[in-house]
Length: 399
Image 1 (spheres, rainbow, N blue to C red):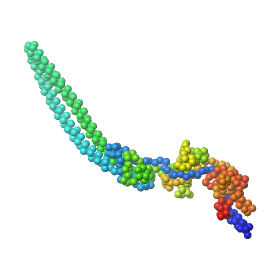
Image 2 (cartoon, helix red, strand yellow):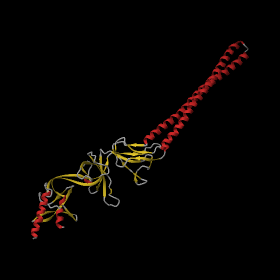
Image 3 (cartoon, one colour):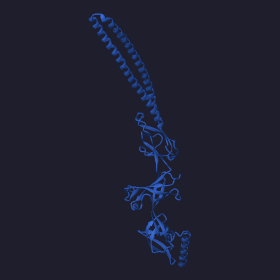
Image 4 (cartoon, one colour):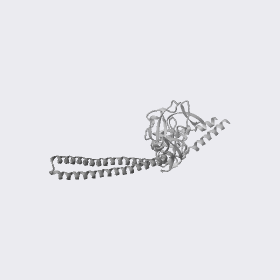
C-alpha cells in the first residue's frame, strides 16, 4: 500500500514539474546568466520646483497667512494657482503710500512755485542793479571835467554799483542751483514713493503662487504642527510649503547593502517595478552611488550606501512617493549552471535542491554563486536537464 502511495506522489510531482516547466525552469539549466540584486526604494522626480512664500520685503510684515491652497497630490498645469496668501498688510501699505505720494506731489508743486517766485524777485532786483549801474556809468561821463575829488567819489559809487550788480547775478545763479537741487530732491521723493507703490502691487501679485511647471503638488509638513500645511497656517518670508515635481523624468532613491556595494557601479542597468503594479516594469540605470556608508536605521548594525536610479522611460503611472522594487543587473555569465529559485532550499547557511531518484525525493547540496529575481547560478555535480522538485511540493509532501 505504501508503495502505491509513493508512486502516486512521485507521479504528481513529475506531472507538476512538467506542467509548470514548459520552459524547463524546474531543472538544471546551462547557458547565459545575468546576476542581479533586488532593492526596494521610493520614486521621486529628478527635477522638482519648490514653492515658497516669496521674499517681498519686511515692510509688509514677517508672516503671512495661507488663505487658499490646493489639495496634496492635485495635478496642476504651468500657471495654475496653487496657493494664495493674505494681502491685507500689503494693501494697507499701498493706501499709506498713495496718501504720502499726494503729499509729496503737493510739496513738489509748492517747491516749483516757491522757486519760481524767488527767482522772479531776484531777477527784479538784478534789473534794478543794472539800472543803477547804467546810471552811475553815465554820471562818470558827466563828471569827467569836474574836480578830481568829485570824479573820485563818482568812481567809488560806480564800483559799489558794480559789486552790487555782480552780487545780484551771483544770487540768481545760486538760487537757480539751489532751486534745481530742491526740485531734484523732491522729485526723487515722489519717484521713490511711486516705485514703492509699484513694488507693492508687484508684491500683491507674488502673494498668489502659481505652478512653474506641469506636475503634481506635494504639500510639505509644517514644523510647528507636524502636519501638512493647510489654509490658516502662517509662513515666514521665503519659507517653502510645497513642491511641484516634473513627472517627465523620475528617479528611484534606494540603499545598497555594504555586502553588495562592490558589485554596483554607475551606469549599470536596472529593471524597476511598481509594487502597486508588479507586472509593469521600466528600464533604468544607476546614476549615483554614495561614498559613505550609514546605518540602515537607528537601531541596525547593518551599513548601507545611498543609491539613485534614473528611470529612462516616462509614464503617467510613475508618481512621486510610490514604492518600487529595483532589480540591479551587475554581471553576465556564459555557459554556467543555474536553477529556479523555487527549487532551492536553504538551511543553516547551506543550500540544497531535490531530485527524483529511485522514485524518491533526494537532497543534493549546491553552492550558490550569484542570484537574480528568478534564478540562482550554482555549482553542482548534477547534469543539465536534471529535473528538480519545487520546494513548495516538498513542503506539501512533508505536511
